[in-house]
Length: 260
Image (tube, rainbow, N blue to C red; front, side, top):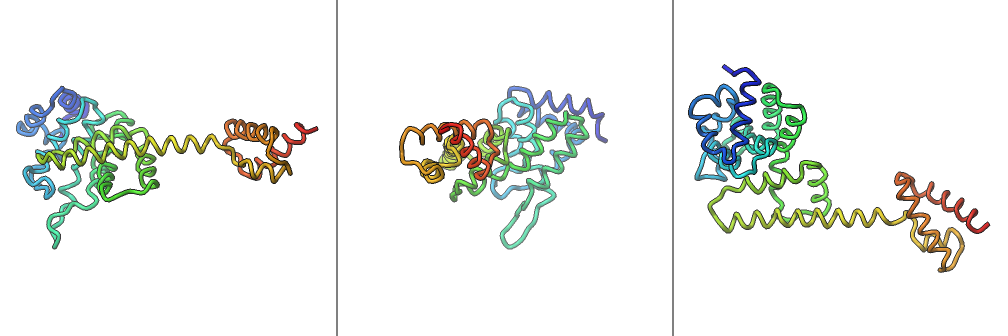
């Protein structure tokens, strides 16, 4: 029987906010209390993850959760990130698979945290982190700039937490594999920073360049073109939604006033 929501939430949160929650999480499972608060958790002990062959999914989940810092949203996401595996387990010619377990797990996460009466923002953030938890897979194979932008855009304000979760999800004892994953996370973080800086630089450029201004106003290179470009830059900063046609009209009006 599920315990009263507030009691279950308080107990789970207290465990997750311990400096090292590993022992408390195992105690929660072994005492049977996890079955009353978050029954999806002990169910993970029945699954053998083909990626983490040295441990079942429950052991892996507790290890991942214990590696994260004591942030409630991050630790809840770590605790729930593989929660959909039992429902998505399939055995075929490729062996055991858990296709789309993140999407299934996200729905399970939202349901359980809502029943435990966590704040709406916590439920939303944890659910989204679970849904995105597998997105980093495949990065080592090479992502385009647009794919990196999409990863950052989809994560939004959760980007930092998502990358922390990705780092913590690596529990392999193989030092080379662990260092390789951390290298890839470092790489995508650097690329996100570089792409954001590039976007800022583009945002600082007026919609019309010097050649377009000279052609429209019938001018040769000179002081007036520099003045026009400064006007256009300020225009873009103050009214960023203007399109090219509207910008040209405003330039015409500025030039009529400037040259008159």
